[in-house]
Amino acid sequence: MTHGNPVYILLLINLAGRTGGAPKQRKKVSPKPMTGEVEIPQPPTITESQLARCRETGDYRPLLFEWYKYVGTLSNFYSCIRSDSAAVRSLPTLHYATLVGLLNRCSRLILANVALSHKGLFGETTAILDRCIFESAVKVIWLCTKGDDESFSRFIADGLKTELEFKKKIEKNISDRGGTILAIEKRMLTSISNYVSCSGLTEPQIESAKKLPDMAAMIDVIGRDRLLYVVGQKIGSHHVHGTWPSLWLHYLDEQDGMLGPRDHDCPTHVNQYVFVPLLVLQAVDAFVRFICTDQRDARPMSELLDSVRDEILRFYVEVVGDDFEHIKEI
Figure 1: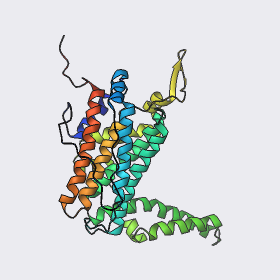
Figure 2 (figure 1 turned 180 degrees about the vertical axis):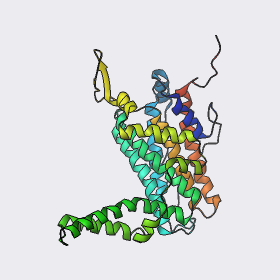
Figure 3 (figure 1 turned 90 degrees about the vertical axis):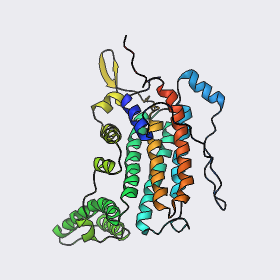
Figure 4 (figure 1 turned 45 degrees about the horizontal axis):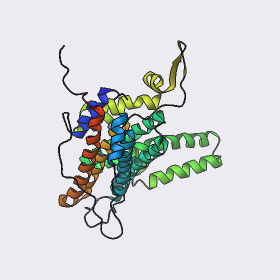
Protein backbone atom coordinates (compact mmCIF):
# COMPACT_ATOMS: atom_id res chain seq x y z
CA MET A 1 0.00 0.00 0.00
CA THR A 2 1.42 3.41 -0.92
CA HIS A 3 1.76 6.08 1.68
CA GLY A 4 0.48 8.81 -0.62
CA ASN A 5 1.59 12.37 -1.15
CA PRO A 6 4.55 13.15 1.14
CA VAL A 7 3.21 16.70 1.45
CA TYR A 8 0.36 15.29 3.52
CA ILE A 9 2.81 13.43 5.72
CA LEU A 10 4.80 16.62 6.31
CA LEU A 11 1.57 18.37 7.23
CA LEU A 12 0.57 15.63 9.66
CA ILE A 13 3.89 15.94 11.41
CA ASN A 14 3.44 19.73 11.48
CA LEU A 15 -0.01 19.32 13.02
CA ALA A 16 1.42 17.04 15.63
CA GLY A 17 4.07 19.58 16.54
CA ARG A 18 6.91 17.25 15.66
CA THR A 19 9.87 17.23 13.32
CA GLY A 20 9.62 13.54 12.52
CA GLY A 21 10.00 10.16 14.14
CA ALA A 22 7.82 8.44 16.65
CA PRO A 23 5.62 10.40 19.05
CA LYS A 24 7.27 11.21 22.33
CA GLN A 25 6.44 8.88 25.17
CA ARG A 26 3.61 10.21 27.26
CA LYS A 27 1.73 8.74 30.14
CA LYS A 28 -1.50 7.46 28.71
CA VAL A 29 -4.58 9.13 30.07
CA SER A 30 -7.57 6.87 30.46
CA PRO A 31 -11.04 8.42 30.36
CA LYS A 32 -12.54 8.78 33.82
CA PRO A 33 -16.25 8.81 34.53
CA MET A 34 -17.82 12.24 34.89
CA THR A 35 -20.16 13.06 37.72
CA GLY A 36 -23.68 11.77 37.43
CA GLU A 37 -24.61 9.30 34.73
CA VAL A 38 -22.44 10.78 31.95
CA GLU A 39 -19.14 9.09 31.12
CA ILE A 40 -16.42 10.03 28.69
CA PRO A 41 -16.59 7.72 25.64
CA GLN A 42 -14.17 4.82 25.87
CA PRO A 43 -11.33 4.64 23.33
CA PRO A 44 -11.16 1.74 20.88
CA THR A 45 -9.48 -1.46 21.98
CA ILE A 46 -6.91 -2.62 19.45
CA THR A 47 -5.89 -6.24 19.95
CA GLU A 48 -2.46 -7.60 19.17
CA SER A 49 -3.97 -9.83 16.49
CA GLN A 50 -5.57 -6.84 14.78
CA LEU A 51 -2.30 -4.94 14.89
CA ALA A 52 -0.42 -7.95 13.59
CA ARG A 53 -2.87 -8.19 10.69
CA CYS A 54 -2.27 -4.53 9.80
CA ARG A 55 1.47 -5.05 9.90
CA GLU A 56 1.19 -8.15 7.75
CA THR A 57 -0.92 -6.49 5.06
CA GLY A 58 0.59 -3.01 5.35
CA ASP A 59 -2.95 -1.64 5.54
CA TYR A 60 -3.53 0.30 8.75
CA ARG A 61 -6.83 1.80 7.68
CA PRO A 62 -9.01 -0.57 9.76
CA LEU A 63 -7.06 0.42 12.88
CA LEU A 64 -6.95 4.18 12.21
CA PHE A 65 -10.61 4.06 11.19
CA GLU A 66 -11.48 3.15 14.78
CA TRP A 67 -9.52 6.10 16.16
CA TYR A 68 -11.10 8.34 13.53
CA LYS A 69 -14.54 7.35 14.82
CA TYR A 70 -13.43 7.94 18.40
CA VAL A 71 -12.33 11.51 17.64
CA GLY A 72 -15.74 12.19 16.09
CA THR A 73 -17.39 10.86 19.22
CA LEU A 74 -15.16 12.98 21.48
CA SER A 75 -15.95 16.11 19.48
CA ASN A 76 -19.65 15.46 19.99
CA PHE A 77 -19.16 14.66 23.67
CA TYR A 78 -17.31 17.89 24.48
CA SER A 79 -19.74 19.95 22.43
CA CYS A 80 -22.40 18.81 24.92
CA ILE A 81 -20.75 20.60 27.86
CA ARG A 82 -23.45 22.95 29.11
CA SER A 83 -22.71 26.64 29.23
CA ASP A 84 -24.16 26.80 32.77
CA SER A 85 -21.70 24.23 34.10
CA ALA A 86 -19.81 25.36 37.19
CA ALA A 87 -16.40 25.21 35.50
CA VAL A 88 -17.46 27.20 32.43
CA ARG A 89 -16.82 30.93 32.44
CA SER A 90 -19.56 33.36 31.57
CA LEU A 91 -19.81 33.77 27.78
CA PRO A 92 -22.42 35.33 25.51
CA THR A 93 -25.00 32.71 24.62
CA LEU A 94 -24.48 32.99 20.87
CA HIS A 95 -20.70 32.82 21.19
CA TYR A 96 -20.97 29.56 23.07
CA ALA A 97 -23.60 28.26 20.65
CA THR A 98 -21.35 29.07 17.68
CA LEU A 99 -18.48 26.99 19.07
CA VAL A 100 -20.79 24.14 20.05
CA GLY A 101 -22.39 24.18 16.60
CA LEU A 102 -19.02 24.05 14.84
CA LEU A 103 -17.79 21.17 17.01
CA ASN A 104 -21.03 19.29 16.46
CA ARG A 105 -20.64 19.89 12.71
CA CYS A 106 -17.14 18.37 12.87
CA SER A 107 -18.53 15.37 14.73
CA ARG A 108 -21.52 14.84 12.47
CA LEU A 109 -19.43 15.05 9.30
CA ILE A 110 -16.83 12.67 10.72
CA LEU A 111 -19.58 10.19 11.52
CA ALA A 112 -21.03 10.71 8.02
CA ASN A 113 -17.60 9.76 6.66
CA VAL A 114 -17.62 6.72 8.92
CA ALA A 115 -20.91 5.60 7.36
CA LEU A 116 -19.60 6.23 3.85
CA SER A 117 -16.18 4.65 4.22
CA HIS A 118 -16.90 1.70 6.51
CA LYS A 119 -16.02 -0.60 3.62
CA GLY A 120 -13.00 1.47 2.62
CA LEU A 121 -14.61 3.17 -0.38
CA PHE A 122 -16.19 6.55 -1.19
CA GLY A 123 -12.75 8.17 -1.06
CA GLU A 124 -13.91 10.91 -3.43
CA THR A 125 -16.87 11.83 -1.20
CA THR A 126 -15.07 11.57 2.13
CA ALA A 127 -12.42 13.94 0.74
CA ILE A 128 -15.15 16.54 0.13
CA LEU A 129 -16.43 16.18 3.68
CA ASP A 130 -12.88 16.34 5.01
CA ARG A 131 -12.56 19.79 3.46
CA CYS A 132 -15.72 20.89 5.30
CA ILE A 133 -14.45 19.48 8.60
CA PHE A 134 -11.14 21.24 8.06
CA GLU A 135 -12.80 24.66 7.73
CA SER A 136 -14.97 24.19 10.79
CA ALA A 137 -12.06 23.04 12.94
CA VAL A 138 -9.90 25.99 11.89
CA LYS A 139 -12.76 28.39 12.65
CA VAL A 140 -13.16 26.94 16.16
CA ILE A 141 -9.45 27.45 16.86
CA TRP A 142 -9.55 30.96 15.33
CA LEU A 143 -12.57 32.05 17.36
CA CYS A 144 -11.09 30.68 20.58
CA THR A 145 -7.76 32.35 19.81
CA LYS A 146 -9.39 35.72 19.12
CA GLY A 147 -12.05 35.37 21.79
CA ASP A 148 -13.53 38.84 21.26
CA ASP A 149 -17.06 40.01 20.47
CA GLU A 150 -16.10 41.37 17.06
CA SER A 151 -14.75 38.06 15.76
CA PHE A 152 -17.88 36.15 16.77
CA SER A 153 -20.10 38.88 15.28
CA ARG A 154 -18.13 38.76 12.03
CA PHE A 155 -18.58 34.99 11.87
CA ILE A 156 -22.33 35.22 12.46
CA ALA A 157 -22.78 38.16 10.09
CA ASP A 158 -20.77 36.49 7.32
CA GLY A 159 -23.44 33.87 6.65
CA LEU A 160 -26.27 36.36 6.96
CA LYS A 161 -24.99 38.85 4.37
CA THR A 162 -26.06 36.45 1.61
CA GLU A 163 -29.48 36.06 3.22
CA LEU A 164 -29.98 39.82 3.20
CA GLU A 165 -28.89 40.03 -0.43
CA PHE A 166 -31.45 37.36 -1.25
CA LYS A 167 -34.09 39.25 0.74
CA LYS A 168 -33.48 42.42 -1.28
CA LYS A 169 -33.87 40.49 -4.53
CA ILE A 170 -37.18 38.98 -3.36
CA GLU A 171 -38.48 42.36 -2.23
CA LYS A 172 -37.54 43.92 -5.58
CA ASN A 173 -39.42 41.19 -7.43
CA ILE A 174 -42.44 41.84 -5.23
CA SER A 175 -42.20 45.58 -5.89
CA ASP A 176 -41.82 45.05 -9.64
CA ARG A 177 -45.13 43.17 -9.80
CA GLY A 178 -46.96 45.83 -7.82
CA GLY A 179 -46.74 44.37 -4.33
CA THR A 180 -48.20 40.94 -4.97
CA ILE A 181 -46.41 38.36 -2.79
CA LEU A 182 -46.12 34.75 -3.88
CA ALA A 183 -46.58 32.08 -1.24
CA ILE A 184 -43.03 30.84 -1.74
CA GLU A 185 -41.69 34.37 -1.34
CA LYS A 186 -43.54 34.78 1.94
CA ARG A 187 -42.00 31.55 3.25
CA MET A 188 -38.51 32.61 2.18
CA LEU A 189 -38.84 36.06 3.75
CA THR A 190 -40.06 34.50 6.98
CA SER A 191 -37.13 32.09 6.96
CA ILE A 192 -34.62 34.91 6.43
CA SER A 193 -36.26 36.94 9.19
CA ASN A 194 -35.91 34.01 11.56
CA TYR A 195 -32.20 33.63 10.79
CA VAL A 196 -31.63 37.31 11.49
CA SER A 197 -33.72 37.45 14.66
CA CYS A 198 -31.89 34.51 16.27
CA SER A 199 -28.47 35.95 15.41
CA GLY A 200 -28.62 38.76 17.94
CA LEU A 201 -27.68 41.22 15.20
CA THR A 202 -29.74 43.82 13.37
CA GLU A 203 -29.74 44.09 9.60
CA PRO A 204 -27.60 47.27 9.69
CA GLN A 205 -25.12 45.53 11.98
CA ILE A 206 -24.91 42.58 9.60
CA GLU A 207 -24.38 44.77 6.55
CA SER A 208 -21.72 46.91 8.24
CA ALA A 209 -19.80 44.00 9.78
CA LYS A 210 -16.24 43.52 8.54
CA LYS A 211 -15.73 40.65 6.13
CA LEU A 212 -14.65 37.39 7.76
CA PRO A 213 -10.93 36.68 7.20
CA ASP A 214 -10.11 33.96 4.69
CA MET A 215 -8.63 30.65 5.76
CA ALA A 216 -5.07 31.77 5.08
CA ALA A 217 -5.46 34.73 7.44
CA MET A 218 -7.12 32.59 10.11
CA ILE A 219 -4.36 30.00 9.94
CA ASP A 220 -1.78 32.76 10.31
CA VAL A 221 -3.58 34.14 13.39
CA ILE A 222 -3.68 30.76 15.10
CA GLY A 223 0.04 30.33 14.53
CA ARG A 224 -0.01 27.41 12.12
CA ASP A 225 2.31 26.94 9.17
CA ARG A 226 1.05 27.99 5.73
CA LEU A 227 1.43 24.35 4.72
CA LEU A 228 -1.80 23.74 6.61
CA TYR A 229 -3.57 26.22 4.33
CA VAL A 230 -2.03 24.86 1.14
CA VAL A 231 -2.91 21.24 1.91
CA GLY A 232 -6.12 21.58 3.89
CA GLN A 233 -7.74 24.43 2.01
CA LYS A 234 -6.22 24.68 -1.48
CA ILE A 235 -5.58 21.01 -2.19
CA GLY A 236 -8.76 20.13 -0.30
CA SER A 237 -10.63 22.42 -2.68
CA HIS A 238 -9.75 20.14 -5.58
CA HIS A 239 -12.33 17.68 -4.30
CA VAL A 240 -15.00 20.33 -3.75
CA HIS A 241 -14.64 22.07 -7.10
CA GLY A 242 -13.73 19.13 -9.32
CA THR A 243 -10.40 20.45 -10.62
CA TRP A 244 -8.16 18.46 -12.93
CA PRO A 245 -6.19 16.76 -10.09
CA SER A 246 -9.49 15.61 -8.58
CA LEU A 247 -10.81 14.33 -11.90
CA TRP A 248 -7.58 12.45 -12.55
CA LEU A 249 -7.47 10.96 -9.06
CA HIS A 250 -11.09 9.98 -8.55
CA TYR A 251 -13.19 10.19 -11.70
CA LEU A 252 -11.10 9.13 -14.71
CA ASP A 253 -9.59 5.81 -15.71
CA GLU A 254 -7.35 4.84 -18.61
CA GLN A 255 -8.28 1.83 -20.67
CA ASP A 256 -6.90 0.88 -24.08
CA GLY A 257 -5.12 4.21 -24.30
CA MET A 258 -8.31 6.19 -23.74
CA LEU A 259 -9.58 8.10 -20.72
CA GLY A 260 -13.09 7.31 -19.56
CA PRO A 261 -15.18 7.41 -16.40
CA ARG A 262 -13.72 5.54 -13.46
CA ASP A 263 -15.79 2.91 -11.67
CA HIS A 264 -17.11 3.46 -8.15
CA ASP A 265 -13.99 2.01 -6.54
CA CYS A 266 -12.10 4.90 -4.93
CA PRO A 267 -10.59 3.86 -1.59
CA THR A 268 -10.46 6.21 1.36
CA HIS A 269 -6.78 7.05 1.78
CA VAL A 270 -5.12 6.26 5.09
CA ASN A 271 -4.07 9.92 5.47
CA GLN A 272 -7.72 10.91 5.66
CA TYR A 273 -8.02 8.96 8.90
CA VAL A 274 -5.15 10.94 10.41
CA PHE A 275 -5.17 14.52 9.09
CA VAL A 276 -8.77 15.32 10.05
CA PRO A 277 -8.73 13.84 13.58
CA LEU A 278 -5.49 15.61 14.48
CA LEU A 279 -6.97 18.98 13.55
CA VAL A 280 -10.31 18.26 15.23
CA LEU A 281 -8.50 17.25 18.43
CA GLN A 282 -6.78 20.65 18.36
CA ALA A 283 -10.15 22.37 17.87
CA VAL A 284 -11.67 20.52 20.83
CA ASP A 285 -8.61 21.37 22.93
CA ALA A 286 -8.90 25.08 21.99
CA PHE A 287 -12.58 24.94 22.97
CA VAL A 288 -12.10 23.42 26.43
CA ARG A 289 -9.22 25.78 27.21
CA PHE A 290 -11.30 28.75 26.09
CA ILE A 291 -14.44 27.95 28.05
CA CYS A 292 -12.88 26.91 31.36
CA THR A 293 -12.62 29.56 34.06
CA ASP A 294 -9.76 27.71 35.71
CA GLN A 295 -7.21 26.01 33.44
CA ARG A 296 -6.80 23.31 36.07
CA ASP A 297 -10.25 22.12 34.98
CA ALA A 298 -9.19 22.10 31.34
CA ARG A 299 -5.92 20.26 31.94
CA PRO A 300 -7.31 16.71 32.35
CA MET A 301 -9.37 17.13 29.19
CA SER A 302 -6.37 18.44 27.26
CA GLU A 303 -4.26 15.54 28.52
CA LEU A 304 -6.83 13.06 27.29
CA LEU A 305 -6.89 14.74 23.87
CA ASP A 306 -3.07 14.69 23.76
CA SER A 307 -3.10 11.00 24.64
CA VAL A 308 -5.50 10.26 21.78
CA ARG A 309 -3.30 12.23 19.40
CA ASP A 310 -0.26 10.25 20.50
CA GLU A 311 -2.05 6.94 19.92
CA ILE A 312 -3.03 7.98 16.39
CA LEU A 313 0.52 9.08 15.63
CA ARG A 314 2.01 5.95 17.18
CA PHE A 315 0.27 3.86 14.57
CA TYR A 316 0.77 6.36 11.76
CA VAL A 317 4.53 6.24 12.25
CA GLU A 318 4.31 2.59 11.21
CA VAL A 319 2.36 3.63 8.09
CA VAL A 320 4.91 6.16 6.86
CA GLY A 321 7.77 3.85 7.72
CA ASP A 322 11.13 5.25 6.71
CA ASP A 323 9.78 8.03 4.50
CA PHE A 324 11.71 10.59 6.56
CA GLU A 325 14.98 8.74 6.82
CA HIS A 326 17.82 10.62 5.12
CA ILE A 327 18.42 9.36 1.61
CA LYS A 328 21.87 7.78 1.50
CA GLU A 329 24.09 8.70 -1.37
CA ILE A 330 24.96 5.75 -3.53
